[in-house]
Structures are given as structure tokens and as C-alpha cells.
Length: 207
Image: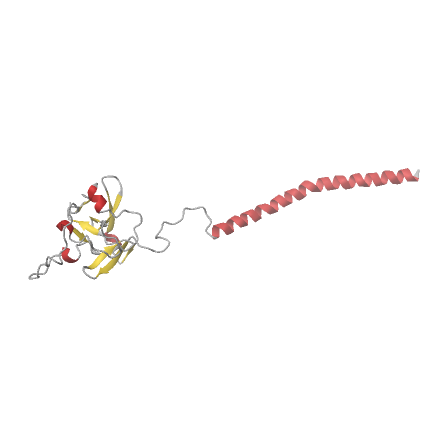
């Protein structure tokens, strides 16, 4: 009789333990999930602080501090303007500055690629002089003091100024948007450049 009572007591104790474990199980799972949430939040905050925000990377040039327009010094022309790669930028006498308008399109634009607006950081140039104009094809071109700016396709290396004086209408731009070097008004009594040093007009490039 006593054996039966003891067996019943052990069985009842075992059932009570199982019930207790079952009741604690979900609670512990919930606690685990609750603890995981702050951990995930902390990880996200760390990633954001480290710059992992999913934003698009900065454009080339912006990361290195490279400017779109740079004031430079040419040994032959004096102060000029280059792009961020050091290529000379030119202005075209057949364009207009007030209002800004580009008249170099199609074949002309192949020989004289427009300086397009991708960023407007400047170095050594008054930012107030920098603007843009909408071209015939809808793209945006940089302007300096109202004048649209171009590169010259035959300038292969940084610092080349082979476009200076081409067709009598193309001149490197100064940081003020004026004509550089021989493009500026010659002082009274100044001798004209000799045939050996004067820039030659490239056929089909002067437009």
C-alpha cells in the first residue's frame, strides 16, 4: 500500500516538473527573441555609423577632391582654365554669353567636345562666374562668365593648347572667361606673331 502511495507521489512530481518546463519554454524563447532585437538594432546602428547606408557612391573626382574647373598657368598663354584632368578649355567666338548659347553642334561638337555639367566644383575660379547652358540636344554644358566651354579633340595630353586661335574663333579661356594669350587684345604697337609661331587654322575645325 505504501509502495503504491510512493509511486503515485513520484508520478505526480514528474508531471508537475514537465508542466513547469513546458510553461517556461515559450517564455524563455520570447526572452531570447526580445534580446535579439536590441542586438540587431545595435548592429544596424554600427553599420550606419560606418557609412554602410546603401547610398550610391560619390562620383569620381568628388572622392579625390578633383575640381571640374581649375585655374592653371600655360607657359605660352598665361592664365587659362582646364578641366579636372588638366585639359585646356576653350571658348568659341560664334557663341554668345548674354544670353549663354552654344552654336557648336554635330560635327563641330565632335571636334570640340562640350565641357558637360557633371559637377561644379572649382579651384582658383570665382564660383559666381560658373554656370550652365542647355544645348540643342538637351544636355547641360558648363559656362564661364556666360561663355560655353569646350575641349579640343587634338589636345591629347594635359596642358596642350593646340586649339588656341583655330579658325580665328577658338581661344583658351582665362579664369575670368576671357580670351587667353593671343586671343586678348594686343597692346598698341605690338608686333603680330610670325608665321612660324602663329596658330594655324585647321580645316573644318573653325566652324
